[in-house]
Image (tube, rainbow, N blue to C red; front, side, top):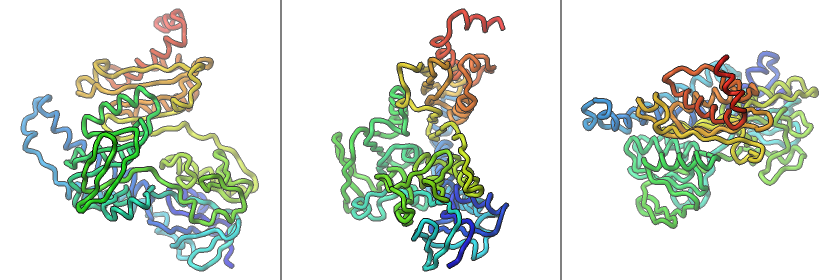
Length: 467
């Protein structure tokens, strides 16, 4: 039986991060990958979706040309096949970029293409070969959730983010089932390039928003572009030409269905039971979020496969934690996790950072809301004065702890706020920061001032004016 020091299962963001560290130390490793190469983000996630969204934003802008004194908008058309061709070109560029210098440079002994399964705590089997590893990193990623009855009934009329970018011709009518970040982004983008979109979400919110006020505002704004039905599961029935979607509000016929029900960790088909540890109801082994170690084994689990925060930057961070601990095993070090940060590239953009609304102890917290409508000069001249900011602070510590935004450039503003949480800045420090005029950051300043008024005395705040 072949023996190596390190086994890396999966060549996604976490696995490639681990690979880079290990190669600096040794060639005594093997990477095993059974799926596509190029990472979920580059191949079917972040990058192709942003390429589609960017095209959609440009075409959608024509609807406001008249307001800015620009004529001729009615003559503009969209070439959907050309849009999708461009999306795939960027997709291919990014996936090749990911592989260049990483998996492309590995030998046949270092990179095995196949699906590995544990047969013992330190042994995996792939393509009929057994390999023993001193330390093992599980980074097998995730896959779209696809209900089997839907797939059986609809066949290739059922799409996920794994298939949508492969289409050369888009369906005329599409139902998006699941309005989390991915479903909402794709639904809005497809609607803007001429697809008749209708959205369904069984929860009462969209984009994973947890603030009731921001969620309500988001539903109000997004539903102006395509109809959204919340709060119940949709029934799906195949028809001769597509599908029939039924909710209490009515029945709708479409040509295809985009299932955006989240992603399932690829933990269930790797023989995880052979680790000899108790699994939870999801089939997940016990692991430490600060070390990525599974139980007390020389096994580490990182990225989408552990189901914690299935986002690229988190996968990279977890891959780094996992490989550092694998390399220094049996010495294990805990690492501080970064402040949570999430962005939906809708219009307006949606972002969240830090603590979620439903994780707050409301008796010990201050929650403020700032509505952007007619309240920010820069947004007004842009024609984008819509959306809301909600910020949360700890009463006792007087620190910003989290929040949600729906507004123009939320992706950038949320970074500033997440950095403030990461640095454990108190609200008074944020009030003291400089804010230029006229900028969108002034909306953040207004929300921070609302927090300050709840946390500090008028005397304290007045004293700032004389500093």
